[in-house]
Image (cartoon, rainbow, N blue to C red; front, side, top):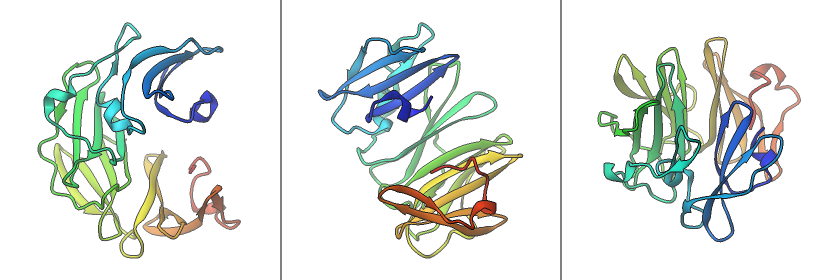
Length: 241
């Protein structure tokens, strides 16, 4: 089940627990509500409230889903991390069950918080290197072979990644993404112990990074992604826009 299947245009979060999908969304009165889907949709359950068009960063860094299958307030406000309304958000779960959430703060820097999945205490990642994303930069995170990769759109129009290797964070440019136009729609898929990075630029041209080369695969249009006829071999078919 995916967001399109829920019937809500304003879904903020989904959690799949076995055969049950828990959906958090914002209604017309800016109230955050949660419903469960298990062959049928449950009645709405109020979670809280947020400003209209509040990004997922505000919500996901706030309420959390506890073992009693209830949404309860989180404790991230005590960390002093101010999340602007225009930030994108990316989250990833590592093999050792550590959750990382990446956002862009008001100064423009990429920031992150983390916690062990079974621990209630969130912490700010204090050793991220300086970053230079453009305002409202896309962010996407994956975990592969005990390494966390957080990709973001750099102000020089390349894609950079924050990489956690042996407990140390590094910021570096992703090869073959530099120059040209600002990047958007950054995402990745892991297959056969490697990842395929996909992105678009501000002209709508879409690419897949394969074997160190940015290969054109289609265009982003007002109707969605349109794949080129000869792009079949440029990336895995599971790679979706």
